[in-house]
Length: 280
Length: 283
Image (cartoon, rainbow over the protein chains, first blue to last red):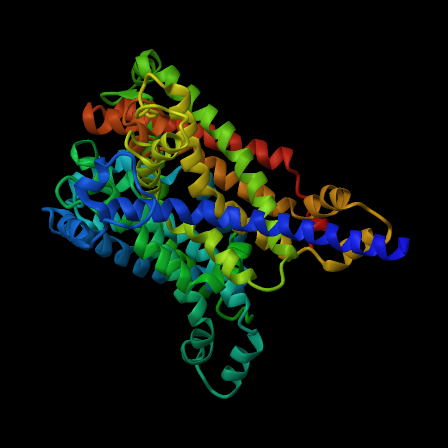
């Protein structure tokens, strides 16, 4: 009798713990998701929704109309294109410059390797976006000020060290023997790289590219300092922030969030591999 | 590999070295020179202007308080999240994906998200009103409510910035060998003892890099503050931005930049010293 009592008591204890455990998990999920839901409500609720009081937490009076109106506001679409352009440049440059460095770190031992790694890691201890401040003067001189290319270049400084470290991990994951076998069968080094290594490393490289995109897409400070008329979306939203009505701010927030959420979803398998490597 | 062509690795790293030299090292030196010079001669004028500015003391204090409030909470939350997913079997991937969503969200967007909740006719006030806790719309984000504004900004920062800490810590936890924990369990160590004596020491490298990354980012806080509080809550990067864009005074802006860099470097060095990583104990 007492035996069965204690067993059922034990089971009750376990399920109470399970209940607590899952409530914690659900609460943390809500903590992430509910604010996004609320800003979406705000973005789709329009002017009337923004000043409604008290607010309804259910999606009753929403439509795409206010969001489309926001997209048609002067400057929004152009700054969206500028953001895409700057992010595209960032992706291209950080992969083109970072992947070879990652390959060198993964495959070769050479003098200065540690110094190079130190340089790359050093960038992490600096608030890099701040470097946009002195760049203003040189950018004006070089004609890069207020251009999408200029923003892409400074964003590459943010993404390149990351790309070099992450691609090092990716290339370490491609067995060296496969590459050496290709040499034995008569491939040149370059052929071996593009026929054997590149296809195997491709998914990781795509994930790195996505991260470079997100880094650039989300950067506010440097983009705001280095542009006046050709603003990226973040820079545009920051400068019109104080004079734009509430529902425009929410629409802007939603527009910034949507692409990055989709991208993070696309690379979710690589998140931990990438950060596990780059945090060493 | 073969040492017959020793120039290959150098050719591979050269483009990135040149690039970082031109757009990292050169601007770094320029910033320092701009900060400690005046019309091309060494001078502390910019530093003096910065220090004697009305907002200087407040922005230093605010930035430090925000970092001190945000970073420890993020580390604790990330450790909790990491331990939770470690116990899960099904649904682990989905939960992890949901928890990492804020990784892709910019600080500006995070500010706007929490603005929709904390503004006068926002959801927080609506809920408090519905529960009968307040009678009319309450302002949380003005300079008359500095504590509420501080908490609002801290919450937005915690909401956005915890994902990156969690990812680094989960990546670290994944590398802890299961045998260690099992052995401790066999010897009767309690879950808390296992956590503090086995897990924490083994994830030190991950903890260290999470702390460095997050603290440097916390000293860079800007857009989330601007979106929520405008200029009601001065922070260091915000001041640098104002001196550069509003006052067109690049020297003082550079002085702020140098100050932020010195603080970030100092924090990094402190972490490297305090959270010691013994290379022989790495899993």
